[in-house]
Image 1 (spheres, rainbow, N blue to C red):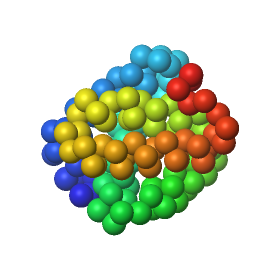
Image 2 (image 1 turned 135 degrees about the vertical axis):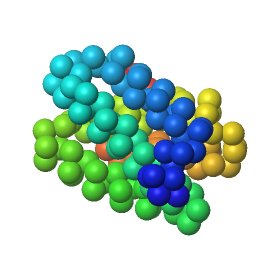
Image 3 (image 1 turned 60 degrees about the horizontal axis):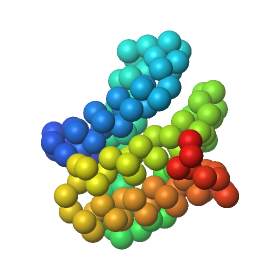
Length: 130
């Protein structure tokens, strides 16, 4: 699925809504820094995360999502956004996926990809404590 199609998919809409709300609840200073445009970018980024997770799932390749994460980290850090923001976002996706995605195999694959990506961004880190 492409981002436009994902936006029409109710479970993904619910997932993105929940994750974006929690990001701004956990770090309200992001709104002060980026405003409404930042919220919209965050929503858009989450649809891209889901696009890459979905593509990885259909191709049964975690490396697609890991390559995307490496690229994303490079882009965002070059713009002054810390890797910890990606880790926070992925941690919240892990938290909310079981609440919104009903296919167990898809859930499991997505969560596996996200955990591997977090480990890639934060080797030896404890992402659950963030």
